[in-house]
Image (tube, rainbow, N blue to C red; front, side, top):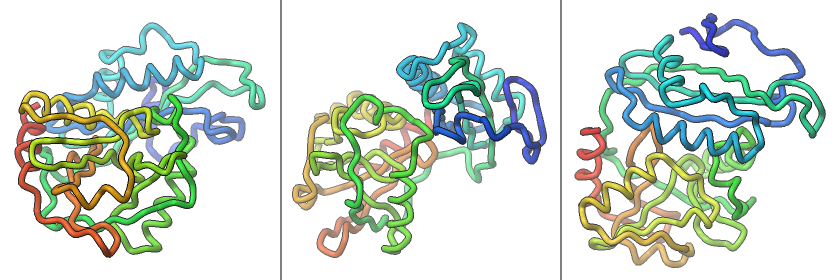
Length: 273
């Protein structure tokens, strides 16, 4: 597959960075992971809005051309059909911790997806708890940055525990998210999810699920939740832009859940976008 580097197309194995790349040196970069289904990207606008918010937050000099339309045109230069797309935007080289050049550069890469549709997992996920490091509760935590060592460590911990996922806590010892997903807790017609002030990523799929829940007349609670409260919920979902919704069957050894009642209707709604 090819890559798109600042509008120019190269083979994916082409060396395009040198040792002064700020993403490599300082993690001075943001990224978005986007799902293309049958050549369509219905959630692209949400991704680009979050990307731009992050660029402005970290004081990049954002070009006026950086719009949803611009990135759509750049993506379709190398992507079609059913594709996982990653846009990485990083600051131009120069400086040490303090940059000398705030202009952004972008790289778009792709990998194939097997299906155009979201589907609910037949076998529930088994998840646990990662508490070696805690997520900070600040606005930067809501963004998709390339400072991902905490998530990398959580992923290694998940492997060590032989689990499908692990829950991450914030600095106040409350549930924030998992290593790759936002989390939703369901009881009857009430859907609870950590608020953005709890240190979770402002997920594009999270946003969409909350919109669907509102349309379906669910009661939505964006609030704080402790691990000890999980046993009172009937369903637990994990969500991200690529997988959609996945349901949980077991948390550690003490909480078991039945197959979900509500999740399939949300998957059906996602597939109509």
